[in-house]
Length: 313
Image (cartoon, rainbow, N blue to C red; front, side, top):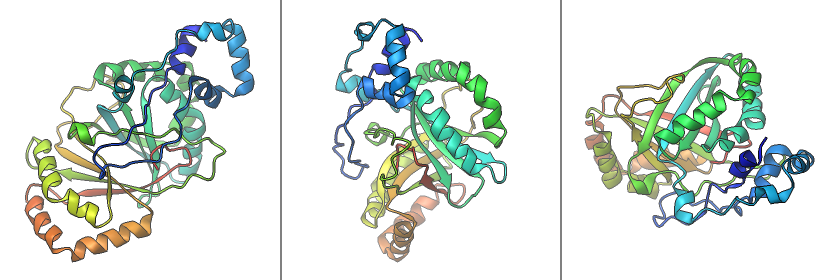
């Protein structure tokens, strides 16, 4: 690994700032990882010492610098992939361990952000993960860096042995700048068992109009605040992107008009309580009746529990 490669890893990707809209998820952020701690997390202290020696010591890393807040925050997530994998029966737990311990950090090292990886509570053979990119050119570059790299070539057979289908992928863009993913915390260390994990609920609204952003405006005006009053915590909101897939080696779904709402709950019981409150909420019922007319089908709901090393939790 060259000094240039190490320098890229040392550049901090996230700056933590409190969102102005209190309805958007505010995570108690850990201190941002320094360049040195990021490399420790990926390589380990012993291997890191050897890398420093090979590259001429710490002086080889001098070009690394802190990014301005606006630049670092822009690194994620103007382009998003919501990836749902159907796994072969009985392989989800080994796949979770493989993803958490082998793939998550190297994926981040390319420049993308693996926001979260999850077990689907309602589908025992489903693994769901979300990754973000600064823009489409960055997406093409970073995907190529990973999938044409040595690690993927060495371990892809092991990963693919568990995967029955990996084509259920939505390419998304923010419904509005205020509702894109931000303030994403560092990934928990593999040995950290103290980090509390909540329930992430992803709701897909399939719209009749080819402009799902219009439904997003309706949702934001008449439904989101009622949902938050009844216990939901909005994390982000995205819509299906019409941009062409610029890394065609990986399939994405096309021709669909979808508004996607990401929300957090303390646990499955809290989500059940939320649903009961919505059922009894007459204002919600009236607003939902009008909104449902804008959809082609009932919403698709994903109840997701974070894996041990998911950032979003």
